[in-house]
Amino acid sequence: MNAISAKLQAALPGIKKWIDQTLQDHINVATPVSESPFTRLKDHYPDVLLARARVVVVPRVPFPPVTQLGLPEFRAMEMMSLAGVTYKDTFFVCNGQQRDSLYFHELVHVVQWDRLGVDNFLLAYAVGLMQHGYEQSPLEQMAFELQARFDQQRVPENLVEFINVRTDGVWETARRFLESG
Image (cartoon, rainbow, N blue to C red; front, side, top):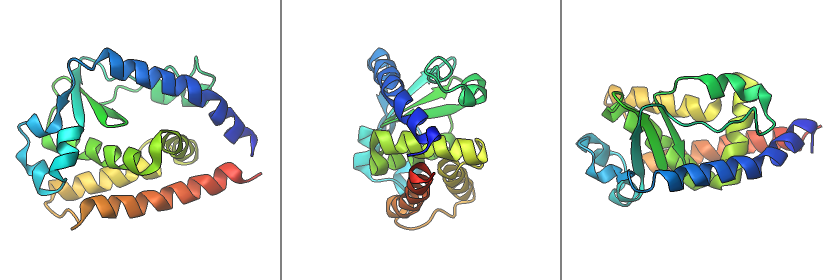
């Protein structure tokens, strides 16, 4: 395990605790995506996923205090004004940013969280940020690419399986990085 991997592993418990507390704090205002007005989502995601996934509209999208949790490398991300962010099966959207395209993007992340589980998602996301920055990080790049395809009405068939296969590749690359050195 390299030094970066050890540092990320050490921060995981605090980040997971923050995520769980944030989700708990918003549980009463989280609504199923299936109840959103964005009916095009049903053309691409299974009904069971749309019923399970939740959305919370907030004035400012919450992000873990990564600097406080020992990861000052991610301070820029912590300070960004994000339109949306996903934690497990719940995503937060900034008030005024609600649109089907953003919901589609965040649902890509719900599928990625499902595929990787909490620890592996957080590790793969962190490695991607470190190596490529926000927009070019592999999990984000996948969501942005699929969002653009959604906007152009060119979404791949079997979307969830498509995301799962690509997510497996992202994890394999991140895992190799974490085990190196």
